[in-house]
Image 1 (cartoon, rainbow, N blue to C red):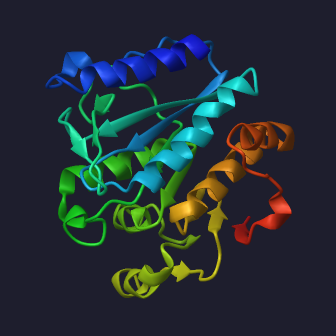
Image 2 (tube, one colour):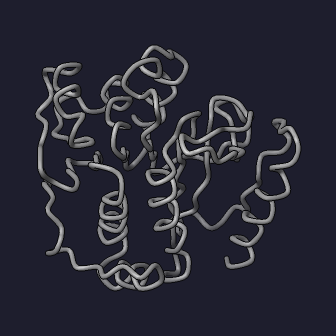
Length: 239
């Protein structure tokens, strides 16, 4: 799997210098059923570096600490280059319509610049999130990604959180939701919502712990110089 990870990195660098097409989608070799979770990261224009990279790093490192692991890839509405809020130019592995898009077990929705306004009016985006999220084993948002999940109907009847200074806007936009303040993240059934920023690492390591146990979470943490202790995190879990 180390070679596979290196392949991803080299391919991403190589593709950055040329316009992408559907045929440029990075291929992922199939593995035996049940060995891996497939984690798709919604990567749209204006995505914030921290909310994208923190969970991506955490999940990718699981392949070095368990016989299973989490395979990570990015998805955008098209195969066009994505510009992050901070100015990085990134190319998605797949588009919404890619015929070879793998089955998605974990849908990750990082925060993006327009998650509280124009993204919520993008019907193709919201419908895709609603469809994939309904079928996924787990759905995770970071920061204002919670607005997209809520608009897609994936937070209805569940408890959640979002970026601290956007909680009032979140409540105003979705008044029926029960929203938690002053927590790193909320886990309600298959839904995980995070305050975002540096706290994006917390919820990601928590899900690794939830899926693979404490030793794997600690191993991933050590590889990224993060001390993992579940008791250190302030979160809400709803059974």
